[in-house]
Picture (cartoon, helix red, strand yellow):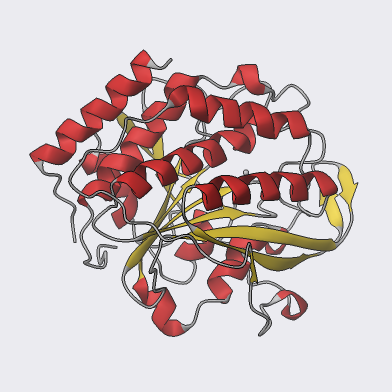
Length: 333
């Protein structure tokens, strides 16, 4: 079903964009995981013992996107250094993001994901366990209609990953703050995915975290996901925000994001991020981001590569869509 933005949503998107101005990996659809890497019956590990109670104000507009706060999180994640999915550095980053989301009042769990050894961009990487950091709003029921918003937290072994993908994670966390203050029409489940980066030449060795997450959902939970958006490489300034779909499923989410946008966007097909894990099981999904840059997957992917204005512009596209999204499943193909 097409998305039709209302005037209040457009006005709020303009406020977000104004706040920004003032504050300032592609082949076939991934194959299923090997049987040894499918979810088990174990439950995610809770972060903390009790979830804080939160009563968000629903009549007061959310404070505009804070580009400076998002950029500071980019810096903090990049300072940790390369974050291969099974590394100690990745665990540090996962803990940092979990703490940020817990402080915002979300119920945060860490979902353990088995990852095989392999070669990531020319560098041998070991097997081990990574984690997905999953943040749910208070009272969340995964069997009821909701949106999934995700960003991968890992990097290739040689890159500190400011743009790829601390930028996406930083926008995810700032949107979490805005959604806390003013929830969308549908609940939004936020996930920082592990092991998005390829560990081999075959697509069966790609996007482990998001495929594990999707495979862990029962049939009713999958049906409850009304759409998914992956924030991946959203920090390079460009004239139009890339809004991509995987090309092998419904384009509804990508279409609706562009229709709701109050700033310029461009359509693209991209099969190189976590949205493909959802698309392969019939869940409409899209990717925000993917602007080419010379420092991609290198030691030079540091904070100065990221432009805070682009963080805000990417967030604005998602925010205007989230604020107007109803509970109808997307059916367009």
